[in-house]
Amino acid sequence: MTRMLARHAVTGALLATLAATGVLAQTTELTVALPNPSAVNNYPVHVAIGEGYFAEEGLSVTVEALNGSASVLQAMASGQAQIGNPGPGPVLAANGRGEPIVFVYNQCPISLFGLVVPADSPIQSPAELKGAIIGVGTADGAEVTFTTAIMADLGLVAGRDFEFLTVGESGTAAVALMNKEVTAFAAAVVDMAIIESRGFALREITPEPYLGYFGNGWAVTRAYLDANPTIVEGFGRAIARATVFALDPANEARVLDHAAAGNPQEGEDRAFAATLFKAIQARMTPTDRTRPWGYQPPEDWQRWHDSQVATGNLPAPLPDLSAVYTNRFVEAWNKDL
Image (cartoon, rainbow, N blue to C red; front, side, top):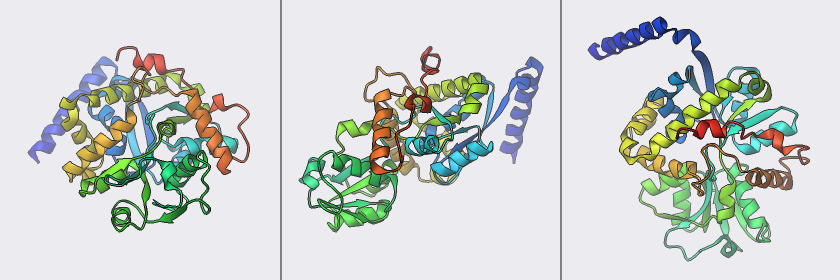
């Protein structure tokens, strides 16, 4: 109780100070929609809240965890959320339906999926998976599209040259690998972290070009972007600052504390949270460190677009792919980093 009263007292003092200086009147309320409840999976937003970066931009951010990118896009379209964290595939599909969603910040420049084998497997590349069974979490998940694209470029077709087998995620996938029911597993980063935290070592064999199938990032509706560019700039700047903050190993404990504040249940297993953080952080750090935070390579968008057309997720090519994303704020986000 004493701690709670103290926190309320500090909050009251802070509000009084903000009101006196006029800052409070300038605060903009934002609802941010995430596609899953994991706070570690999206640690920059929680670090930006906990370190006060959003507050310095005049933003008060409320996080809403939903179920998948489709729900995120629906929340944005209905006005229930101003900013969302969808995947690029669903954003392309939305634009294909005539729903103008704009990707503004590439948070995961490296794919959130990977093709993995047991660490002691003789398999060194996807080309060696001809005739093999590849495990997937779900029959129609993004990992299937991701792996299909890799194999298709090798001239290998599912059902003819290899097979997919739905084995579930994390624990059940580890069992399938251990029992040699599958030769490889198309895994999300969180699955890799869970499997390895249980003592089963993995080795990734994803070809480097496919790491350019970047993951979820920050998006807004075209109407919101046109009406609120200053808010979008401030939001992205706070995310970039939080991402840089987390790069310092000395700040890891505070990053995990901020994530635990966002999802206390996830934070109960500190060792796993640390493992997941390192795995996600690797995906949030560009392989080319000369590229600024949030930058969206046009060639990576083209790769995503062409893959979606080839798999039928986009019934036809978009007339203007450049309308789906923007790098207009990148310079401002990275100016003082």
